[in-house]
Image (cartoon, rainbow, N blue to C red; front, side, top):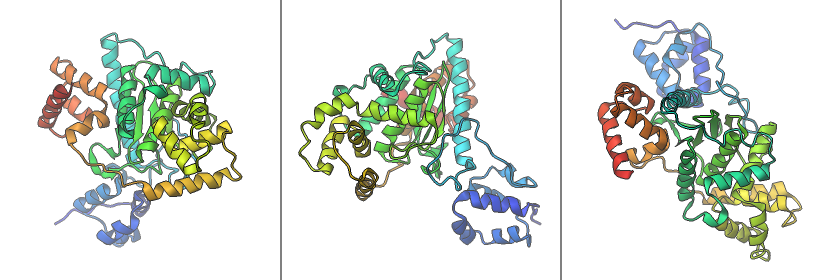
Length: 383
C-alpha cells in the first residue's frame, strides 16, 4: 500500500505560485488540485515529482506553512514585476548558495597558498563613474582600440580578464547543469559576491549576448565599488538604488567611453539613427541600446522623446534577436558554468590530495567521477 504524505494545502499552493507554470503543472498533475482542496494526499513519489516540477526543495513541502525565504545577499532588484519576484525563487537561491560555497572553498584555497588579494576590490568606493570605468578598462585591457571579434569573443575575453585579476567568474543559464531549471532573466540578470581574495561575479546567460556584456560590466562595477548584490541590470531603466544607478553609469561608460564616442560619432553624424547605432555598435562591440543612451547622455543627437526612441529600438531588436541556444558541448561549457579559475584550482587540489574528489564533484555540480575525469582531461587539452 502506497504511503500517503500529509501536506499543508497552503504549502502546495505556495509552491504552485512560485513555479510560474501553475497551468502546465495542473494539466500534467491533476491530483494537485485535490491536495490543495484537502480531498486527497500525495504519495511520496507524487510529492517528489511535484517538488521537481515546481523547483521546490522536498523538505519545504513537509512544513506546516509556507517558509519565508530571503536572499543571503543584498537585493537591488527593482523595475521589473516586483510582485511576481518579491520572494526569491528556489533556482535563484540555489545558484547564489552554490556560488557562496564555491567562493568559501576558493578563499580557503587561496589563503593556504598565500595568494595575493585582488587589488581592485573596493578601489572605487569613493570614485565617480567616469574614473571608475577608465580604471576598469585599464585593468581589464579593454580600451576600445583593443576590442576585436564577435560579441561572444567579448564575453569570453572579459570573463577571462576578470579571472586573470584573481576573481571568479560564472556565466550560465541554469541550475547545476540542469536544463530543466533555467534561470529567469526577469527575476535576475546577475549578481556579485564581494571578497578581497575571491570576488565572484555571476551572469545569467538566458539574456542576449549584448545584455550579458552590460551585466558583466555592471557586476565589475560592483566589485570596484566593493558592494555586491543581485540585480536585474537594464541600461534602459533608472534603478531606485543609488548604488545600482552608479553601477549602470559605470557600465555604460566602460562599454562606450564618452571621449571615444565623440570622436567616432563625427563619422556617422549625418546618418539615420538606426544606421548610427549599428555603426557605433560595431566599433564599441556592444549593444545598440547602450550606444543609444550614450549618444543621448553626451548630447550628440537631439531627441524630442527619448523614452519613445529607446522603446522603438527595443522593439526593433526583438525582431532581430535569435533565440539563445543553451546547448553545445558539455565539457566546453563547464569553464563558463563553474569558472575556469575555480575549475583549475579544484582539479589541482584533488590531484594534490588536499581536497576530496567527492567535495570537488559536488562543488562542480557533477554527478560522477568519470565526468570529473573527462572534464580534467578537457581542461588539460585546452590549457
